[in-house]
Amino acid sequence: MKITEAAYAANPYPFYAELRARASFFHDESGLVVATDSRAARAILAEPAAAVRPLTEPVPKTIAGSTAGDVFGRLIRMTEGSSRDNMKRAMMEALATTTPALFREQAYRCSIKAIDAAEGRCDPMALAFSIPTEVMAQQLGFNPDQCTRIREQVALFTGCINPLSGLDAIAASVTAAKVLLVDTAALLADSTLGLARQIEMQMRRSGEIDDELLAANLIGMMSQTFDATAALTGQTLVALSRHRGRWDDREDDIALLDLVLRETLRHDSPIQNTRRFMAEDVVLGDGTQLRKGQTVLILLASANRDASSYADADRFDIDRQNLSSFSFSFGRHRCPGEEFARAMATGVVAAMRARGLKPQVHITNEPSYTISANARLPVLATVELAGSAHATTC
Picture 1: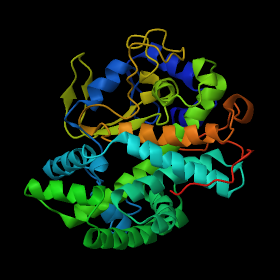
Picture 2: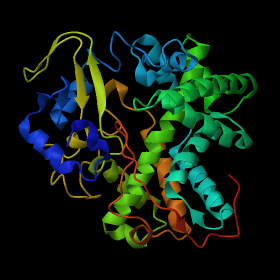
Picture 3: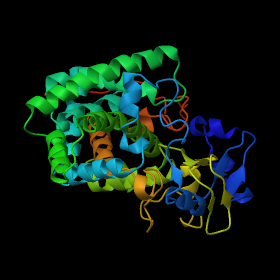
């Protein structure tokens, strides 16, 4: 197996175990430095000289100079520096004004409505992609009747982030970026409520307001929700299919389902890897030398199965003392929206189960996976459920 194929392999974990046994760091045949275990992942993700983009290519060449490139170049997940830090701080302070429970409840209602509108026909991954993104859009302040179109544009925009995208997808992402910038500008001009306004207020309080930075990262909040939360939702359904436990007959126990999601994040990570680019020469604490310009591939999913950090690491266990993981990164670039992503995924999964989906009956425990550079997106069949005639508003 090639390292670049592991994210969508049926079972990459024996391969990851072989890599960890080989070394914490090693050079692969392409010249990448590969970080295989929890110690190596922690060291790189906490290293100030390990940047999220190459110094010579802050924006991918395929979109440089385009509207999509302008948005990409302002995303806090793709940048370094004080402006990025201020933007992330404003986001975190704005998120502190709401609760994950609100996101979960809305995701639940929207999923119930979608299943009922389809008369019980449930496409698990379609819901996994659509519902969290629409919920995020509404929480930012968009009107519900805008959200389907917003979500469609966000889906197109993510083509500029996916390194496997072809020319048509790149062109579509540029057009989508233009549409989304118009939409976010209108939102900020008209809305007095929602997270978008809260983020803007927090930026003003810090004395720094950058309208282009703000708009780009509102788009970023939705695009990050689109793929990462979809992967988490799909992986949780697969976990419920594979593993028996007390959650099988406690479908309305949200706290228990959240524990399943947290262990899924560790045990079969929705985001399998990430990269860092060395901005200067560094010698790590263990003596590992990294040179300016080198690229480090961090195997997050492998680090999550490292027995030095997780006892009996290959076992799915929601009662383990350490339910943390590297799946939302670590250090200064750790995703500030982890609790909200978990909440939305929980809401979607809970709604499917409430409408009659039985993971061990309806969800394959050996799915194939969509080809992706880092996301683990299971391919799941559409299911016919009983549905309900009582749709709720979203």
